[in-house]
Length: 206
View 1 (tube, one colour):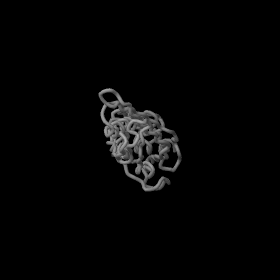
View 2 (cartoon, helix red, strand yellow):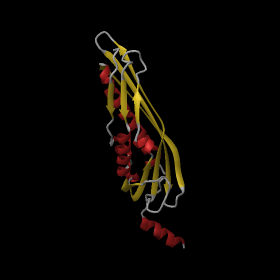
View 3 (tube, one colour):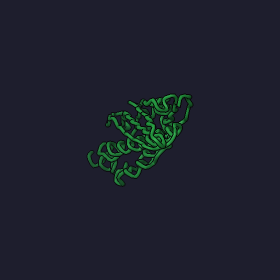
View 4 (tube, one colour):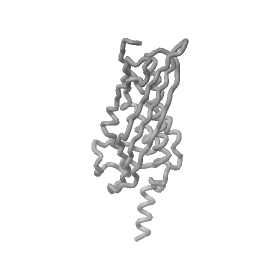
């Protein structure tokens, strides 16, 4: 307990939120996305909040899993999804451009020494800001999405890495479910009509 070790907690991506996309909200169009580096490179050294196992550190690697999970959701909602190198809208961004930035990331790890084994509790909260602009560069959505996850298990100090990974993966799942509920399944993206229909409406209006 007194000699400290460093452990890695690697988080896996998830496609589970794709199942929450309503079929009538799956749109046949091109979109793009920009994910800021603070998300892509997201890692954090975690020190337990408890005295037990407090000498250990846990490197929590989140960025790749979070980025990959975002892309999986976009792929599940739109026909063609491309990455953009800038958050500034430009030609070729598609019908919509999604811009993701990190607001907060709050992981926590706590140990409690029991008679037979150590009880481990981990939690994770992720908050992201999302901006959506259309092909004309007009902002149509600006909102925050949040997700929390927890994990409880028994084990040794080193098992804190598993608890952190589990809790953080749950928070990624939840934050992207909220992305689906608040944006993809909403009426913000009025793309239930095709480009041909838009042309017909325009000609009729003229």
